[in-house]
Amino acid sequence: MTSLFNRIASFVSRRILYSGPYSIECPICHFVGRFKPFGLVPRSNAVCPKCGSLERHRLLCLALHERPLLSEADRVLHFAPEPCLSGIIRDKSASYQSADCKPQPGSIPLNIENIALPSSSVNVVIANHVLEHVDDEAALEEIKRILTPGGRLIAMVPIVEAWEHTYEDPQITQKPDRERHFAQSDHVRFYGRDFRERICSHGFDLEEFQADGPRSAQYGLNRGECVFIACKTERSGSGERDPQSMAHFALTAR
Ligand SMILES: [Zn+2]
Image (cartoon, rainbow, N blue to C red; front, side, top):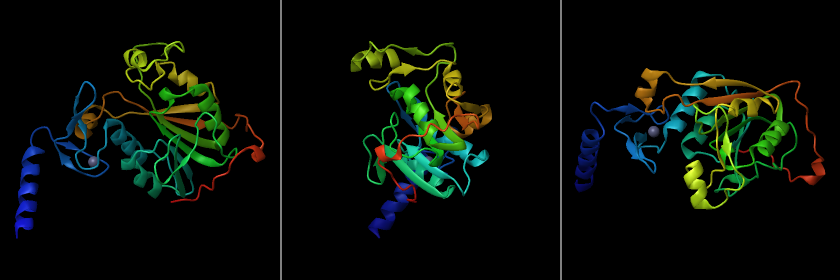
């Protein structure tokens, strides 16, 4: 009886706390109510209290639902996997494998700058807020190599749209300096608008997905944030590497 009372009291208090004129809807877990703040300088309505999604996760979820980014025939490799999105991506694809340089259980160890997978072995690579941490020239070449012709890279990065050029400086290596220059101690650059040219220069055609104003309010999104969908062009080289030099992983886990 006490347990039932506690559950009812918890439900009622949550409805009071997380409802009202600031209600946000999570497209991932379908929670509706007030979201939590998040960030060094806290952003209001950033975190879904049910699934933990941030603005960028909810935008990618919308893109996955509204654009034909994944098909039931796709083999998907998901770098730095976000737990709140893994299930959605898995359900929309034929095979799913997550990977990270320091992987959690269920993921495999892969270095995005030197990916130990055969050429043309996956149809889709998802790398959400990864490229600003790494040598992106090496990473984009490797992603292109492992993608099949026509395969897609789905990526999001922090961008200063007012800047024409990306800001990076290899001399800035100390964590406090990186935090001051690039907003996070493990970031190595701040992208400008030329992020698009960087992607296309590696043999990709580029599309973008954004949410409009009403839906940004509905789902608690960062206004103007983009999901970049880079399609490996048929004219891109295959970039074959000696398979004997690589560890092979079977991308069949689901
Ligand atoms: Zn949620």
